[in-house]
Length: 180
Image 1 (spheres, rainbow, N blue to C red):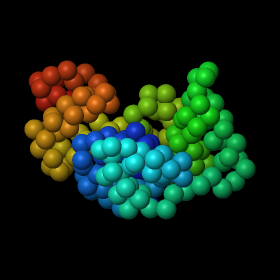
Image 2: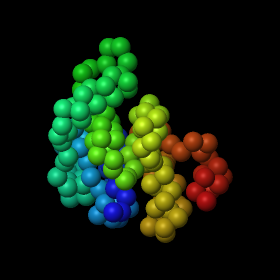
Image 3: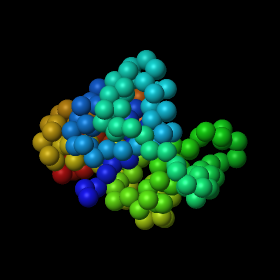
């Protein structure tokens, strides 16, 4: 079976902000899945100004997966607790926890796509492969789906929106090194 990609909502927001859900769809190439909580988060985010393009995520990732067993439900709770900080709302980190519980319990051959550092560490702790928005954008460049100028523009847009950026990229010269 080919490897699947499971996104966190933050990644979906990033691709919507650069108006390139089509690029995400091309990168996913029919191998996308998502959990119910991320699908719900995406539906809520799509109602926000400038994020309406997120509605295409349903076409990219299909019907959401739900925790099915008692063990998966317990794992969701436990993983969410590992990600949470005192005072976090009960729903915070639920999408990441649900995704990881499903991937771990079902031994999914795939990648968790997230930009959340704590979720990345927790995924790696459980031997789940992780990539970020930046990894996907760099892959798009290496596959010639986007040129360097367009990619630089996407990174600038996401920086302006305070969405972070690739580690070590401070200017066009460091971007050119990172992109290779």
